[in-house]
Image (cartoon, rainbow, N blue to C red; front, top):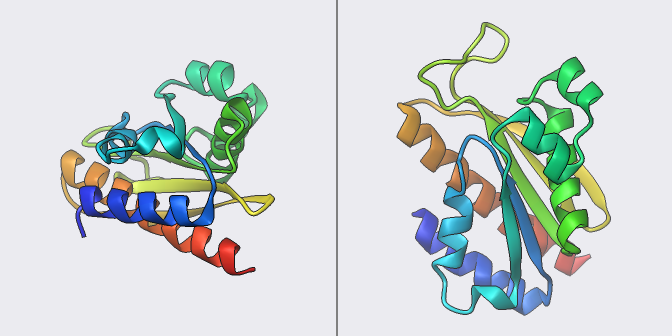
Length: 163
């Protein structure tokens, strides 16, 4: 499913659940926010997004600690979780997601190869992160990351709504 189609489904899910959303993006540079705001009426459920590409931006905009970034790196479970929590807190959103990864073609390591992406979630009173590895060029990795984040937050909102 395309990012645009997922954004429409996300909009319907958020409206149905009566919750608001925030986002924090790094490697996707605002592509998820662009998909969400492409849906008419998005301002009723989408509070905003942070493009925190640098570590400095992650610290100053989202409150990710320098210790977290130094110890675990920008592409990590800990940073992904902190980014999502920071976006939700900064905007007062009911839920949030974050995307931080290595879209390439440079920047990969043996521990974190190109295509490694961490997704953070702040939802239902808890925060957590999960990772994926995507293949392809920079554009494909970024697109896959956006589609994964939007699809996953839809699932999580529906699960939370049923609880």
